Length: 59
Image 1 (cartoon, rainbow, N blue to C red):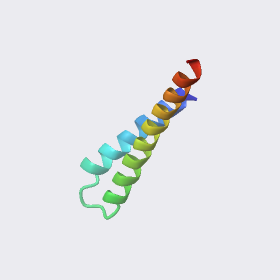
Image 2: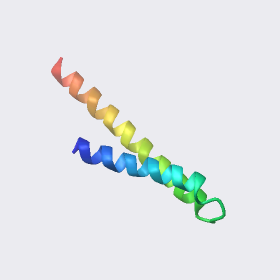
Image 3: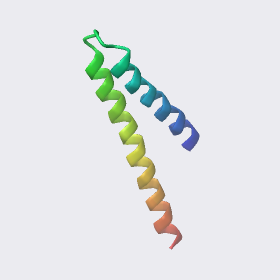
């Protein structure tokens, strides 16, 4: 599951970069940018939550 999340996160980061640099004249630039950035941030927060939960269970 973590490998799949890493791949999805990389795709979302790539989408964020592409929308910021490559979609300069498109009206979908900002919705794509914020959607990809929000998705990547959600994955980061979820992974940190899972790490903390596992760490607390081991104690």
